[in-house]
Length: 250
Image (cartoon, rainbow, N blue to C red; front, side, top):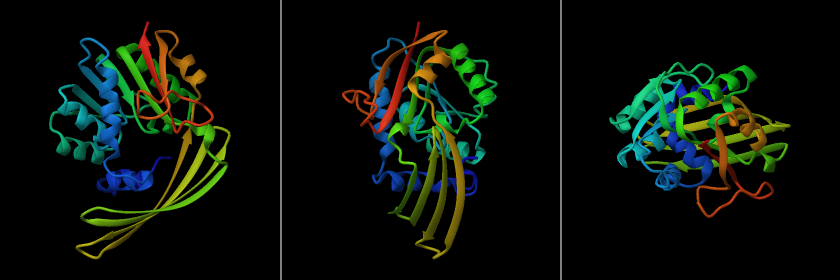
């Protein structure tokens, strides 16, 4: 189960929640710029699908750079905000486990841990089959380096923007490659003085590089693995923050 309440009832808070947990503002801009650097290495790459792109933090930057971006997400509330953020984005409702688009794209991207919300094998098979069949050139899959995660974790984060202050308590347990995380989120509206309390739980299933390759080996080869949103950061399993795999069509 993903952060259902955050993505549906409180989806407008997602950018603040995200930056609070990361400890920096406008974090998605750096990530999108990293993507653009990779895209520029390929000729005639124009159409991109952002799988699980949420409120359009990456898609909006890519669209403003002139790419034709389709954003797929299961949250209608998130898609509405994405469209408001950038009208050039084509927003499509849908889930990873059953993508029904019959259109090809030059590149498929899945950013910032979203990939790990597929927790059932059948869902993963359907997801990677679709990517294999409908991606023309390039696949970028972004995950945290779960190999560095402790078995248990508890941390409190504080953040604010012009409208809200937020306190996030994040607690998780790891069992192998499966993580169960509970969030307690307190949101205080500076203008109305309203206080909201959000309790949410999510489950994630991480895949190592070999597993990712096994799903995509039919049509794609692994060309690069980055350890952060920087072309100079080569992935190291024992120290990298991220595991960002780049696959090219064979």
